Image 1 (cartoon, rainbow, N blue to C red):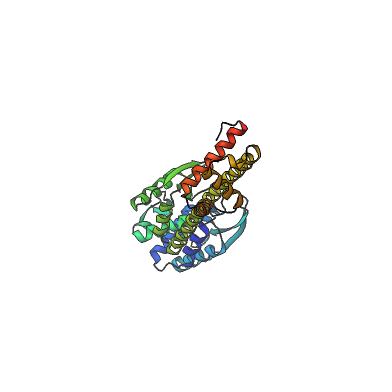
Image 2: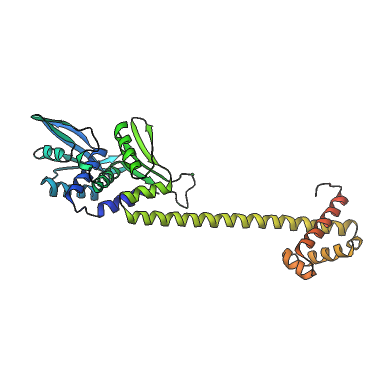
Length: 320
């Protein structure tokens, strides 16, 4: 189940009130998926978002913060996931102010350079740090949780993808400082920061924060545990029933063999009574049969095993 959609929808549905957190969110989103380019001697930026709602959210924030209106949004197909992506381009008048304001470019003398420090002034406040990582997650994050119908063994998994090792390690350090344990693995040309512990995933989503998603994830976990518990009980019941059926078949077969080869009258009285009761009441459980004979269940089991052993002797079978 693609749980990331739920988390990202909650993030984009809840407007950010403070401008400093809006900046941090945009900076994180752009850092997570953006690419700088130069066109006609001017610097620009393009980045991809998963849906139109996110593109609209980004546009609203750019408008309110920098009075910048997005002029280019292109729909392109993500061939890997077979879904549309929205390519947003920031260029032309005002683009430079946006990039400097978001901490992506920094002034240097009469010009500017790219700021490679992922966590700069834009994330100094704790609320801004959360907004920044929210932006990264919206841009490059994914989260899957197993469903009850899951057959491939896939478990809980949350990840964010980075193009270089340093930003992945910086993000890992920031999350660790907030009590969230993550790991990093290289995947082709990317560096993936990931979490597989369901408790750590809950902690991460709570850190963003996305409280509704935390509640939904908790509900999914509980339902899955209940389903697994129910399945275990069903499997146990089926196994017990199979054992009972096998034992019943073995007992009836033994009684029929003794009756055919030697006659039930050759049995001791206590065994004869059990054989007759078993033969005449095949639908009864051991407990019901023991109550009928006024003996304990363990005593009934013992006598039935004796009957099976006698039948094995008659057929020359030493296996009980």
